[in-house]
Length: 298
Image (cartoon, rainbow, N blue to C red):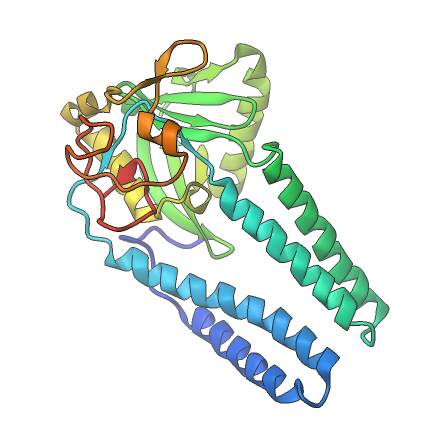
C-alpha cells in the first residue's frame, strides 16, 4: 500500500512502464493479426484489456490530484450502496475475455486454455452473484451521530468522535480509504448475533492494512479524495453534522419515511445542486455534470 498523500500520488514510473508495454503489444497484435488471426486476436484481447486498466489507473490518479473541493456535503440518512453495475460489467468482461482466449487459443499450451477457462468461470460467477444481489453487499451512511459501514450480514456504527484518523492508500492499484478507530468498544454492531463475525473481519482488516476499516471507494462510485474530505469534515466540524439529518424522504413498503424520493423513483445516479435537488430541500453541493460521487459531492 502506498503512503498517504494529499489527493493521492501521481502516476509513478511503474504505471508508465506498464502503459508503454501494453501499447507495444497492442500495436504488435495489430501487425500480426492479418498474418495469424488466432495469435493476433489473443494478443490484442489480452493486452488490450491490460491497456485499458493501466490507462484507467493513470487517468484516475490525475483526476484525484485535480480535486480541490473546499467543502464537501453529504445527503444524511441515505444509504450509499455498492454500484452493482460496475460488478456486472467486470464479470461480463472477464467472462468474454476468457471465452475469447479459449476459442482462439487452441494452439497455445494446455495450461493456457485452463487459465483462460478459469477467467470465464470466475467472471460468470461474479456476474451471476452481482445480478442476483448476493455480492457485493453493504453500504455507507452518514448520520448526525455516527458513520455506518455495513457489510452484507452486519453493520458497524462509528461515532464521529471515535474516528481517530482518516487515511488513504492503494492496494493493487485500487484506491482505498482507511479508518482508524480510537476505541472499538464504542462501536455499535448490528445485529448482535453477528458480533463475532464483525470483530473477526475488523481484526483481519487491521492485520492486512493496519487500519480498523478499509473502504474500496470505486465500489461505491465515489472518488477517494471526495469521500476522505467528507468524512474528515464531519469528524472535525461538530456543527456540520447537524446538516446530516435526513430531509428528503419517501414512504417505503412498510409506510416508513426513509431515503431520497428521487433516487427511489428514478433508481439512477443524479447530480445534486444546492437547494435545487429534484426532491427539494437538501443543501448539498456537487460537481456539475458528474454522475460520480452521488450523495457525496464536492
